[in-house]
Image 1: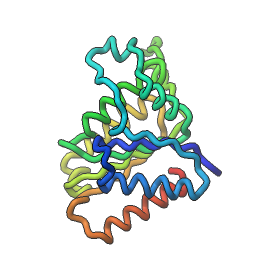
Image 2: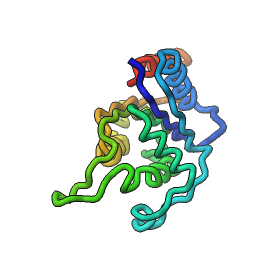
Image 3: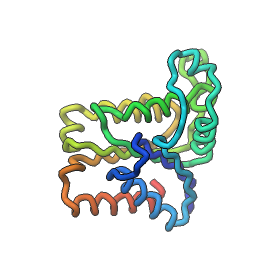
Length: 195
């Protein structure tokens, strides 16, 4: 059954020469071939300001690029986010994009008596795909995957996405061509399945 998929390419370099771009392209190609509908957001090509206060986040008016991204996210049944691990976390531009996009009134509602805001993006699933220079096992065990756990639990699940799956791809600079091909094939499998 076809799925509406919104793909966020979170690499801040718009030149598209990175392995994360190839992974994203493989996912999108196979998803298209399987009959899924896709909406692509390339964060590195968007223009938007960074938020500087809680008031801006709560009451500020999003610029056109952010409103279009919100429409794409609301349209999708499944969200896929690709990004490289920089200094142990997502690149600042992607974080700024998520802060601008996942605002009250769009991603979460006003907090009720329980103190927890309603999750306005319920009914959608997500996948996080992270590339990194270190071995993925080392990131998962030694660093406990802290930044990906935070994105999963404190951002995506907080807004209602469930389930949220993760794909951690380590040693991308030193991996063999065969290892890259295996990961590209795996992304194709996820794209074909719409997961």
